Length: 289
Image 1 (cartoon, rainbow, N blue to C red):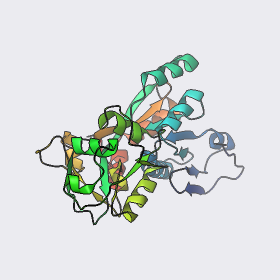
Image 2 (spheres, rainbow, N blue to C red):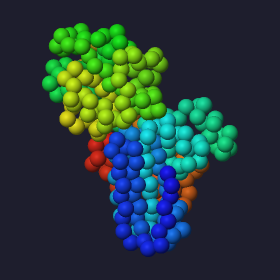
Image 3 (cartoon, helix red, strand yellow):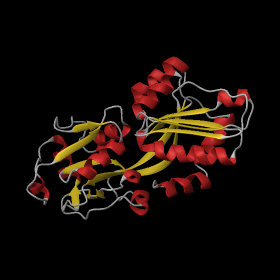
């Protein structure tokens, strides 16, 4: 992203592109050098709504600070961290060892992982879908293409339409690792660029199923998820994500190249502070504690 400099600094600039492609927030109350420096945050589309709100709120209370937020997916953010084009990568999955090795080869550091919030990876269906609960094995077989009709999991005699994320998405990787056990998604799965697109597709498709961050579940219905057949299904709530009883509870991360200092430390410390975590809850995510 091209950084901007300003000679007259007195207002707040906000630019948001739909689907998490781009969000820039700048508090213009410092000198040109400060404005040019700023903090860049790039990565997870799951986190982009939250990061935008963190940036807006932080800059209102920290005059002279600039935080620029860009989506694109966890993989995109990690690549930007490795090639030096972002200060913070936001990721909805852990960095892989191969990615850390690339970072070390370029910057002689394995990076620093900062958990910043928690999330429940929700399973979305259309509001008219009668299926209220799935177990993890059923969900796995649906996305592997082994179950293709809703009647096989207690629903109507209708074909299941699969919606998924692109492979640069941390949510895609997390789902593949934890639900599919590393196996490939069914070729019938329709790949969409962002969680908002998945939600929009499921909201319009009575036979659709999708997955993504709990904060995005607007106009669709979450399916309760059970660890095993015969076990009670659990919805992603603050309580079930906090105690791990929801099967797809996960941390959301900031990654930086080295131990934060200066403005970077000030911002990351604020994000995990009581104020930052309260904002995470307000936006629809879950606090660390």
